[in-house]
Image 1 (cartoon, one colour):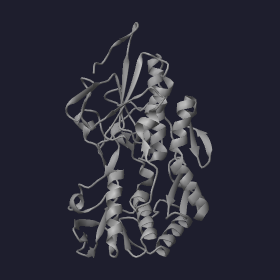
Image 2 (cartoon, helix red, strand yellow):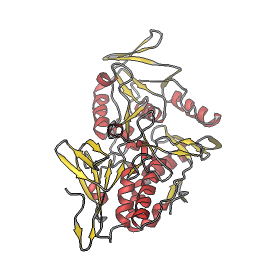
Image 3 (cartoon, one colour):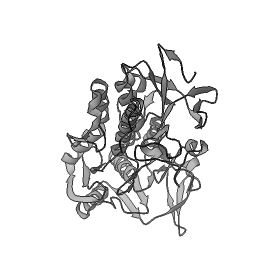
Image 4 (cartoon, one colour):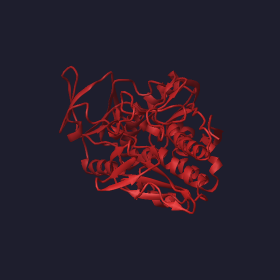
Length: 401
């Protein structure tokens, strides 16, 4: 594939988007919809599989519950964007090429780097060999098959963050005969205000989840986990949700990255070392007034939209605008009929406002399902990408036009 080819009098500008998570998909649909009538721009999305990984529902798949399968080519249908299936094995930011499956080369003029995060299985011995993760739908299905065969025993969930909490609650609800133990350095809901945190912890206790806080796992064995201090907990299954890591492709490409390997961006989401590379979602270290953003779908999709709009502005000879984003909420499901929603200040610190119970569960489901109608609206009305659904209402993302 060549970098340029002539379409009439103009050379085609190739925009290559790596990774079709929530952020990459938002970038692809928003950009393709806005340049659909232009013959001088080609948008290509690269991903290892055609199935969209709906990370917000992986804890459901992991407990054997059926969820809809989203097909990436179908999501792109009608936008004019091309889809290339394959693994990114190398990025050459100097030559502006990307190697796919080691034997194909794609050239780009502008790159959107959206190779997001995965569970970090490298820091604790035995995790890679003996623990399950929720990195993909296939991972979740493997865990579901194991849980379905288990009958009785102890399931240890390592990590008391949001993924760990939701997974522990879902397993306890779907498999009440199992003993579920949630281990973490911090209390579940540590970032919440006192009342929603207390509700979350009481609900986990009611569901039969045994919570151990202030715990550090030092080794995972085939039938147990070892803790700092020498204690051992028997475990028929270990699910690892503690910590994340990003793809090493960015640092290997010579892009400027932070201590976690995320691409350091300027205010428009361009790499500070390679301005023809935009970074979105978990792959980006995006600094706002309150600090560096942390990876969530809540913040990821707006970064994809903003990158797309910045590319359009640049193609039109204009300067991209700064990206501004403030957090709004932290929704946490506790099984199918209960949840906690902590509303937050823009810096993600907790407000006094929160929801619990069935109303919170409905709210959480609305948030989880929101990407699909959002993508659909962007295909038909690209300008709608400047607005983001928040609990049933739409708010303009600051800096996005």
